Amino acid sequence: MDRLSSTSSEFEDELDRIETEIKKTEWAIDRYLAAFEDGSMAPSQCGPRLEQLSGRLRQLKTRRVEINDLEAEQPEVPDKERSTMLHGQLAAALRDGETATVKALLKELIASIDVYEGLVQPSFRLPGAVRTRSRSAPPTGFEPVLPP
Image 1 (cartoon, rainbow, N blue to C red):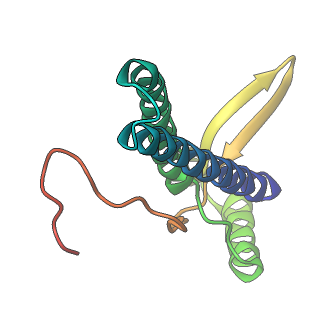
Image 2 (tube, rainbow, N blue to C red):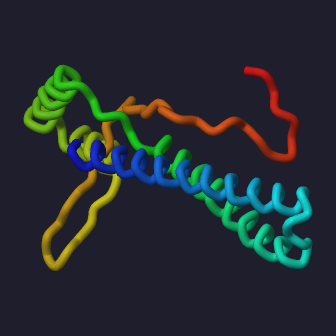
Image 3 (spheres, one colour):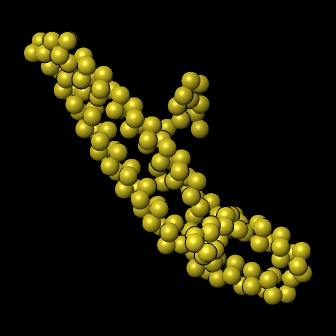
């Protein structure tokens, strides 16, 4: 559970850094455009830099969407009561269940198994665990945005 909390925190930290970079980049673009509009900078001077800044802005916005998608895929950490209840149910099923039932249960609960130099580390998923989006990007794309 600590790993899920730290992952969520890492996503939030990266999103904050990206938002800061987006604001700085947009501010720089505005500064170059203002210099061009007031005649203090020729198009040949500001054009290449504006292209670089625009490319960087696209990269940052793409990464922001990727992080939001990754964050949405992370399961919600269950509260203590639900975790205790699931632990009791799982223990009873493993202790008293038939082999086929136990096998089906483990197949449902184990998300992946990693092997590191002889150490076997299963990763579990909790049934019904869903993460709500704390920050969601507005729906965009080629299609018109539909109202909620």
